Image (cartoon, rainbow, N blue to C red):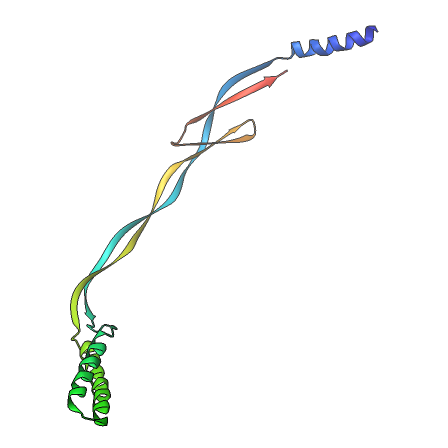
Length: 162
């Protein structure tokens, strides 16, 4: 029974006696290497020109053909007599339809100047310094610290647990 009580006391006592100590040392930097990054910028610009645009006046509307057909039918009806009146009416309607269609499609094309533009990009690349890689040795170990400037020394924290 004494052994079972003694063992936890010894283990607990060991934890109470465990301590740690920390201290800092300054280590000289043996090498500082600049770190560069390629930065690419894209600047937009426009290229513009004037262009003549031709527009046909024709429309796909059947109104001209319809009006021509009606007018031709009326005129053909006025001319003929008997069976010839029917033939003249039909012939007049067909001729009027063709004339009306040609007149509606035959309007003159128009042209105008329009400004056209295209967006393009000018790319520029440049190397930019983004920081330094500082290298030191401490007791046979290589220590690397990145910073925004070249360092002379690196602070090292040493912790000893016992």
